[in-house]
Each structure stands twice: as structure tokens, then as C-alpha cells.
Amino acid sequence: MVIIMVTKEFEKKKSKLFKHLKNSSELTEELADEIIDVYGSRGERAIKVIKNNGVRKEEDRWFVQGREDEYEIVQNHCSCYDYVLNIVTGKAGVNMCYHALAKTIRQLLNAD
Image (tube, rainbow, N blue to C red; front, side, top):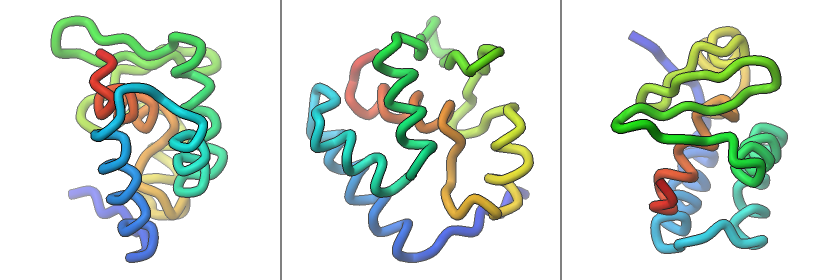
């Protein structure tokens, strides 16, 4: 079992952000600011990957281009070092690496 340790404040902000993403069809500047407010530098990197067309869906599988490798994202799980070392252990204070976040943003915006 994976236990991700995040604060109640983070969960509240994340829920609000995800509702805004679901109600939008594009990544606006306001949404980008909200993503960065909730996810910090991981949000910045997720936005950059999306803008560079680094998120793709093949049938039911999602792939996100990282700096050096491409990662398959299964639900919100990733095999990148950040996910394994910081997200799973709760050190990051957020629930996703930027690869999984980029996939989630695209999915919520119905941009797949």
C-alpha cells in the first residue's frame, strides 16, 4: 500500500483546482497560476510539458515526456525518480510528480 502524506490544506486546494480544470476546456493563464500555487515547481514543469506537446494518449495508455525519458502514467503512478523517492515517501508534500500531474491536467481538460 502506498501512503502519500499531504496536508488537509493541500487536499483542499487540489480539489478546488481539479474542479476548475474539469469546468474548463483549455489551460488558461489563471489555471496555470492556480496549478503552480498548488504544485509549485512540479506545476511549472507539468505546464511546460503540456505546452510542448509532451503528453500523449495511445488508446487507454498515457505517456509523458520527461527530460530524458518518456514515462507511462498509470492512474497517478509514475516510475520516475521523483515519484519513487519523494512522492511515495511523502517528502514532497504533494501527491504527484510533474509527469502524472501533466497527464491529469490534460485528462481533466478533456484534451485527450
